[in-house]
Image 1 (cartoon, rainbow, N blue to C red):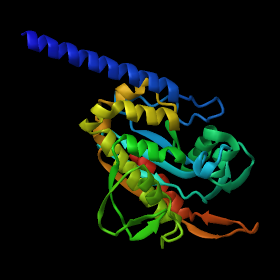
Image 2 (cartoon, one colour):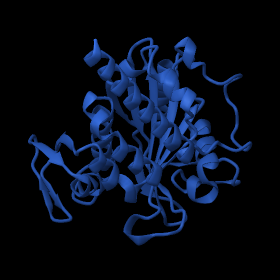
Image 3 (tube, rainbow, N blue to C red):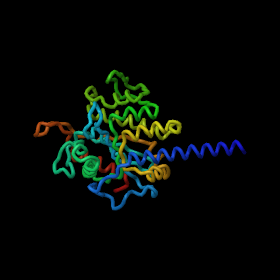
Image 4 (cartoon, rainbow, N blue to C red):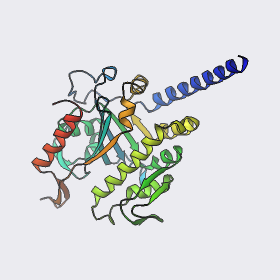
Length: 299
């Protein structure tokens, strides 16, 4: 009985310490969206009622290659999490996609929305393009990818092609265990990929899936402080502690472990202004809109 009491006490102290640190980090990275964000839903998504949610992931180039300005969102992905189907879908939006920049009075590459107006303008532009609500956002500094991957102990990936980048070589079909530097090299290569930016986005999704798998595993419990530290230095989000707690139940966690990938297509070309854009056909835009609306159970 004495040993049991000691064990329960130690576990209780540990759990309290974990909660306290998570709560502190949550407050540090919390950045609410401002009033300029258009509210597409009549009310906020109800996590306690197992309502599917959408998350806009923005990988910004602030801090990458020594940059200090706000930069652009060179990675844009919409994640839908459906606890009813226990499925999540990551849909990549090509950064050069030509669309209306909501609130700026012009049309341009969608990754310029973040440069022009930050998270709010990026959210509004994606909502307008895809005709869905964005419930949450997560902005990650590309310069912090190394730190986050290192914090989770590295990630295992299978390379879809053979290539070299920044002193690293990846072989098609082989399992590679990547530390932070290797993960950044794996995710950033574009010019050697026959699919160009589309191929790069596919590799970025592979890294994200690897991080998610690590974070949702039991092994993170012994390393949670390093993970929290990497997040507080490199992440901004409107998730709050109550949201994280709700996501632990109601099958959201099961959905996060069952990820499928989608890629918004289009065709690249030079516009009248001499700048390269990704042009979406009506059929492709309708396909992606219908897919996401179905995942969010909006149809």
